[in-house]
Length: 165
Image 1 (cartoon, one colour):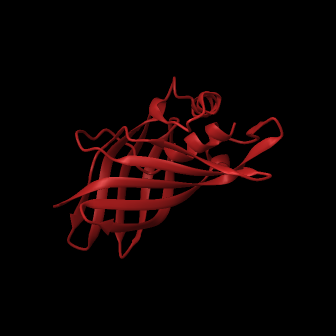
Image 2: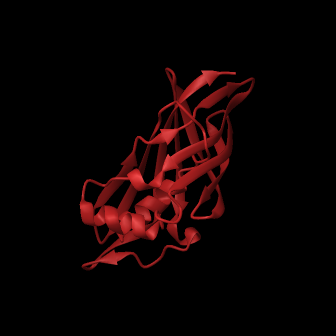
Image 3: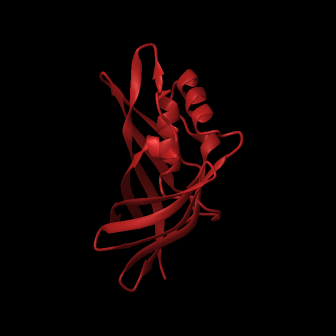
């Protein structure tokens, strides 16, 4: 259940699409109730960000949902079930733009288009973006296993290579 929410949040990571070549990383921070937390992460991310005249842009970034891992097999299975990984094996960042450390984007996750807003910074040759997502907006609710639940809001962290335009 927790994994499923985490995966969903990761999917809403904002970075999906169908890019190629460059490697990135996505990690979704999931808080549990009554206490605790975990991460769902993958390095199977294709795409890059580009510096523009007044900010940054990324489009057609693809995240492999089937590769998300929380390091616990049962939680991984639940996460992929919640994210319907068999039917929707990718999360796509259709397009994202940013300026002055703030950004917004449009993603496709589980066959739905989702808008996200967040922050970013550039460090060396990498763009580091962070945005919150609500699992309930993806239709994921009531995630519980043995009296432990997943909180509705997750935080998606995306690292992508960045290049000059």
